[in-house]
Length: 461
Ligand code: ATP
Image (cartoon, rainbow, N blue to C red; front, side, top):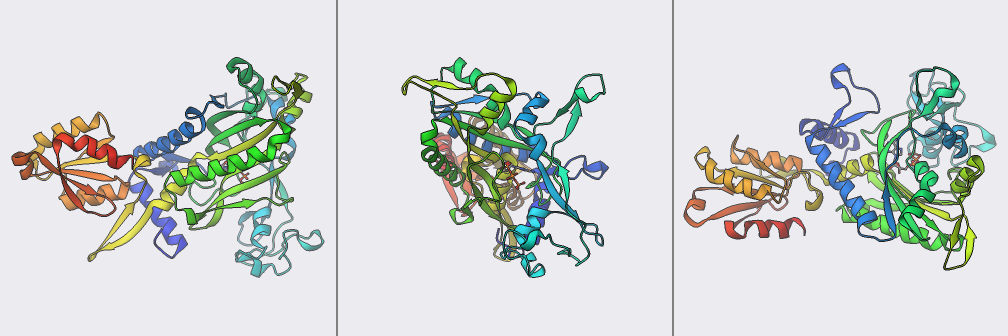
């Protein structure tokens, strides 16, 4: 983002997303619902392109990863065995004065020195509060904080007509567990051999204490997860491999390299199932934040499910002639977070002469709309429509006749359309059109006979 003020640049992006049909607050006419978002026509295209890119790179272009899609609601015993029922909660504190609710781990993390809160909690320079104490003053107003309390993150629901405790079920807080409990089904039916992976995209739900920063922390979101099953001796090798692959994927979306970094979890931060984890982070207007976790989950999950279900989850390795429970390297990314990252990274407000223009500089292959076709004036509607209809067979194309040509270009800049094609009077004479480039704003005349090839080359660059 080009603005120096983080709040204003995020606000400007939120407002653009609504104005141009990327993202709306859920149930807005009833005042919205905190932590839930709806994707408009532009947002849903962008989402699909990001998702397709992930699926292609993770599943279609490989022969050692297969796809999978599970039900959202699973047997409640899954969550008992996985440790979620016991461990999946956040500690929270409330301010008695300003009534803000905050996550204790965020307060402590910010108090480690890199955030502004460190100044307010001078005793908390280390990750562990000295003497097991917790902060007592609100970082926002200085008011007194309550003692920390547990806040369970899983959404509960009921299955069937009987409203007894046996009918309680949960909306999944992660997609991964469905892969673990199906790993034998998938491995046997697809004749996969370790090392191999299972990938899934799907909704996950967490009753977050503090949903915020636009879609960054939502209560309903989509995950793109891949669990890679390996021999225990090869954990480190595959962990490094997948960390590199995942980092490269974010760069392939056109995200600036200097805005991406890796951060290893220290012992206190590690999830209950992980041996080691490294987060891939992006520098948002609100600071460096996690995009994805790459974790070595060891054989924790398979062993837990083996014990709880009584079903053998070990694997006989024909090459090694050895039976073992595989270790798992997990790559766990958020689709909504990636979409927000792509939007944040592409968003710019710049001066063009005396005017300001807002532009989303998406990489062409993920732009929600690839082309817009304009007749210069209404008289040229017929040839312009013909060209738009031809191009629509190959590219996601808008035909637009309303407003001045300058206004039409600006509208397309705001939704990140990489190229606009304009039909003018010269087209009638020599069969050429102008192609205008979103980023350089330069225009080039191109013959209609080679227009589709020309655009295809530009869009895949
Ligand atoms: P945090 O500590 O920020 O709550 P986490 O470490 O619990 O996150 P994971 O369990 O590792 O997150 O989830 C994997 C990925 O799923 C995250 O990297 C993120 O991209 C996505 N994700 C997790 N929670 C949310 C959420 N509330 N909203 C949007 N995406 C999320």
